[in-house]
Length: 290
Image 1 (spheres, rainbow, N blue to C red):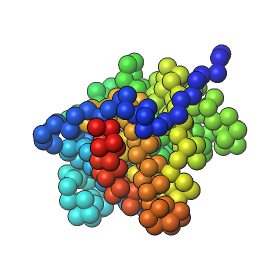
Image 2 (spheres, rainbow, N blue to C red):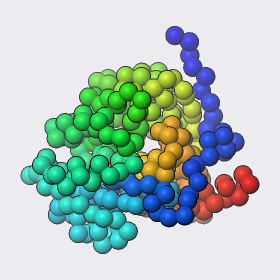
Image 3 (cartoon, helix red, strand yellow):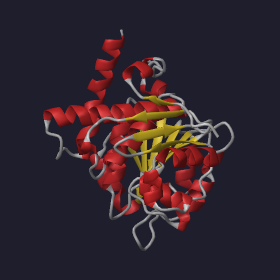
């Protein structure tokens, strides 16, 4: 097989795939649900949810473990928060009609931030190909059984370790040949794969491939991946295609890292600060494009 052409993800490239017009109300910018968090890591859902709103999504729901739902509702007053049953380890447990009902109304769904891989989560993700919404899978939702439906690709956001877990290989092998692994995973799962790292690869199920080198080492911090997954989901809720949402999310996330490196320092800024930069970044981009 010929090695695919890998294009650089630049502002000029994004100009050819503008985001959908913002419309005049929140209804025009889509509804999304973040399914995530656990007793040990409730903040991951918060980081992802806030990032989705900063990307311009109109309506937000968070589905999380019941014992953390009230605190998340206070922390993110913009969201409708759904408290779900939890198991003995503090993870989301099966058995919630409220979750199924919430997802049916969504334009985009993010599953996995702040969650560990559990039998319930594996079964849950196996059914997501039936959804009409754009599905983004992160962290605990990334497993070897993931596969999207025909014509409706998922967006997967693994780092090298998660990619190795998904394909049953070694992290070192993924780091040695990241493009080949991303291409195979995208094809096998009918998904857009965002293989995160200092050089992030974005590969579609048809072999379309992009690379982004930007943002700096400061983005390698706890919670940064949750913010990235939230940005991607927010752009998808607004109506971007899975590939467009992934590209806009990766570039905006990297640009936020670049901005923070200049204002705070190359290391030491927090993941919660990433999404705060996004509205200004998008405004400057749109002004430069006009």
